[in-house]
Length: 124
Image 1 (tube, rainbow, N blue to C red):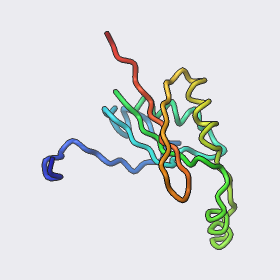
Image 2: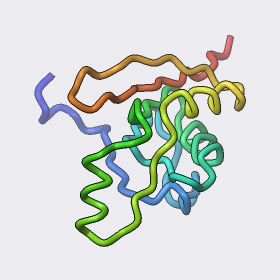
Image 3: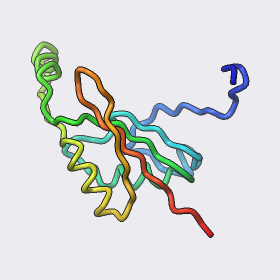
């Protein structure tokens, strides 16, 4: 399908820690979130919000390792504190604790990353 035929894709650049479904945006069929979960804050709350934002599927990309030397060095150069992120296993376990059904696959890159797909229950 040519890109010109795509008219139902909406990009929302919003802070998940402040977003409200129904107020800041409406529910979408598919939600894609990339490395946007708040480190050290309410990750479970953010996962619930992402799930609530999607009618059918959520795709979440997350780093497979918590520590990243390059990001540590960049933080040092920028003069900001470096905060490690929880590894993908923590996110996966949180999803199970929230009774969501994560499925995952790994992107093969220099920096390992996980894609976690949440399947919405189908109504019968």
